[in-house]
Image 1 (spheres, rainbow, N blue to C red):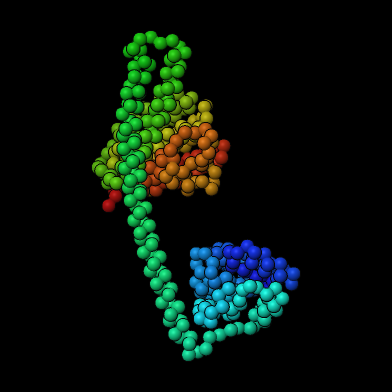
Image 2: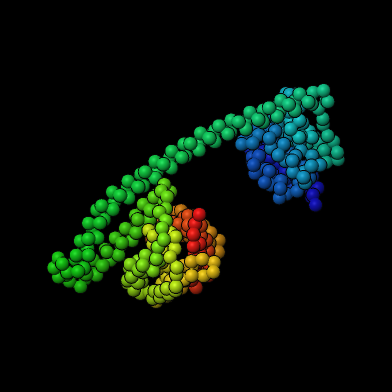
Length: 393
């Protein structure tokens, strides 16, 4: 139900805001302020005002357009909307009335008259345009709205074209940068492996420990670069699907992930059920499982457990990764699949990553016509489930 003391005032001038609040507040009204048309429309939907005051010259949607939008709301159909402006031209008054206003008050605001005028509009006062002029004014107003809409469409089209070009340049830059960084990183990883294998001579225990830290950090950097490159490829290339044996496709990856889990003092248990050949891109499937397992390892504390399950079900091929990690806040369960999203976006966050792993997983699953879901509980872990159809049209 409308509260007869609630008044919405759409005005960007702070001095006018304070004046109206003080003048009408002294008479028992509650004046709610919106500084532009868009926020005024939003507030009107929530507030159920008894009367709306709107300045004509507000940023964004002007007062005429804001009034037309307000007048279209069913709960404001009989609520007085009053323009309050410094524009004293009669043509502006007529345009305001045609747009849906019930009155037109001039600035500067008369503090003595304003409460009386508000009471009159609440009591039923309505200003109208003479019938012969109304039709022409309405036609001119509609034409103005159409022209403004056309300008906005042109501006948006130009902005979208510019954004598309910037996105292309960003992708090109990231791809080039990733390739350039991978070249020295490959040599770095190669020499670190030679040191670890003793091929370059014996190393002291302290040196071996330092080399192991360097190798782990280099592998993290390599994985982030691979994710970045793969993400760029996904956006511009089609997946190459064929009939694959998932057990054979994932065997090298699972061996690598077992080693990584052991290094992180985690137990990775793999359950491989019966699976018929799957119509899929083998590289993409490996990347998707890598992303899920990498996520589980990254966010699980030492001593935790991870289980990877793969099997046929009546609904399709099932891939599932369960962990006993830190869990995901409920409000972030959908956001974690957005590119570059981080649950903790501070520089001090303890878990390194670019925020692309799960975005790549979802992209791959969607491209194969599958579904991915997640269940999680803070402090107890997460379960990611992927269902893939046998055939994709």
